[in-house]
Image 1 (cartoon, rainbow, N blue to C red):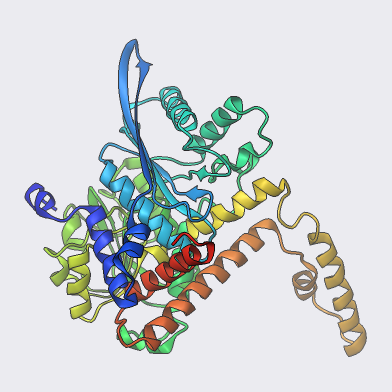
Image 2 (tube, rainbow, N blue to C red):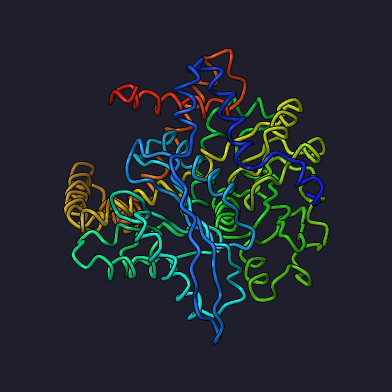
Length: 475
């Protein structure tokens, strides 16, 4: 968006509220209940000094808690030079609805630090991160039982390890200290599969969509993911893993990959892994020989394709460019990439939108698994894996005895193999994404007032939250 468009456009939180209000109107909730669900419970703003290269710099950060109807409140922390309080509040609200939709028993929270990480060294970032963590802990906005952050834009396993270690030193008697944050390195209490969880969840979401012929037909697409032309905007953690898995495992064609400083296109399919490595080394796709480079990133969003996956930032498809989108289907891997007004335009064009509160729920789902792992103090599969292998071996022996045929080594290995922690994580994530979509599908096709998947998703989430309030007697 241009500066003029951005200043006149509704804020991120306003877009979220408008989507939620539409669901409220479908459910016919009274105004008081609706306001209780929609309101952000609390917002912490911190300003703290850190001595950097001999000079004192003051940093600003936030942590918003949208809902504590379930604890802990959950949501990532982003380090970015464009962060605002409005953005943090909007993202916290989306986390509340996202967790409710996919049955993860968390409230919604989000945090941000106004900083450009590229301008600081590793040691400087560690000082800043630990100081920010100190502010959150002191104010009660970081705790395994009440508020648990995770990685987001500009943060990753490294920052989560620093946060967990800082919390541990401030709370030396808390044996559950590792559960104060998720997305940690595996050796520091993390869980296998968390790094790629959001991108893997995007893949599972699209796969589940294609298991419903009625929905596939509504998108004017043929059956199966193989050969589908996909454009991905953003080759960060989410976009990279989603594109990589869809290409390598589902045989989809990634025809364009869009970054802020250019786009690489190839109608025969861009090699995602090669393009990612080239961009990581050179900072741009310019010069990469596996496709055609263009500096016009905005125009690439409007290219014809079967599936468009915005996996970068919010408000990428607005009322200004929505009319020119030529995808059959938009899959929101980022948070809030389609504004409320753009959503209406895309629907009028017959474009199917898979909403962010469903599509990118893989991250919080696997964070939930990590949090449980930390509280239980045991790796998933540790007690049952070898037992399962023994039972599998017995079944294989019985099968050979009953048939008089010796199993091949590969078949026997497959039968006797016990599930690893990564297998269990992927199984749990797949089950979560399937169940959530099936619930959305059922809601969409059983209520004549619901016309799209986004409304179905918000209706489901709000019904669950309001039922919780009713059950515990809050109103």
